[in-house]
Amino acid sequence: MSIAPFWNGFLVTLQLCLLSATGALILGALVAALRVSPLPPLRSVGTAYVTVFRNVPLTVVMFFAAFGLPELGMTEANFLKIPGLSSLMKPLGIDLPYFRFAVIALIVYTAAFVCEALRSGINAVPPGQAEAARSLGLTFTQNLRHVVFPQAWKYAIVPIGSVIIAMLKNSALAGAIGGVHGDLFQTADTLLSATEASQAMSLTTILIGISAGYLVMTIPLGLLLDRVEARRAIAK
Image 1 (cartoon, rainbow, N blue to C red):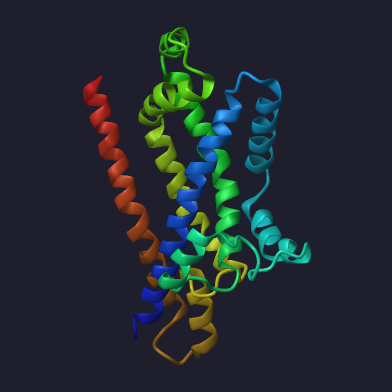
Image 2: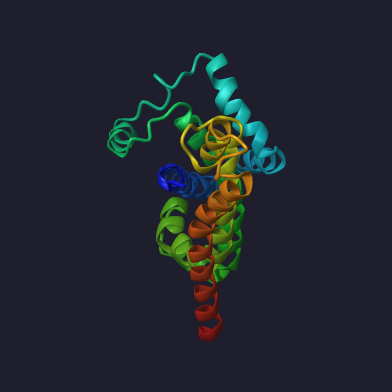
């Protein structure tokens, strides 16, 4: 049995998750800033975002991204035409059908959970830190950037890591609905379609290979989080 399909699927899934995780961390930080903003309208926007995406199934978000956005006239050809993103995707060979839509779906969904994890970290920062920064004349944005966020990330790193692990597993939905051709889950579907029951590659073998691919991504991250948490416990 050739491992090439599994390896290619692993690479596509890994790239999908790396892009999605990066976007979710950035968007989640922005939404967290809205959630703790002193302006009620901004807090309302942040609260509404988190409420919606924490309570809508990822499957719905995936289907909307894959099929709803094209109905609105947003196609792969003109969606997210960001110079930096386009130049990154082409050399990696991951500008696949619906790839960008799958990335967006994972970003907007995961960002809501990143926001809440980061907000818990912000709440763990001693209030005196922010008050001291305000007394020095720092604006709200400067306060978040230079005082609150650097400390909040330390408190929130383990919860955020758990959110990213969940996102790695959730990425299987991209292939399950046919959203990304070439990822691990879509690789399983392709192999099953091309394999007869009499051949050596059985359903069990394929699923074991797919599971191993996800375990390779999630177990090291889980061990890293355990180590970080243990060091924090010792530091206390």
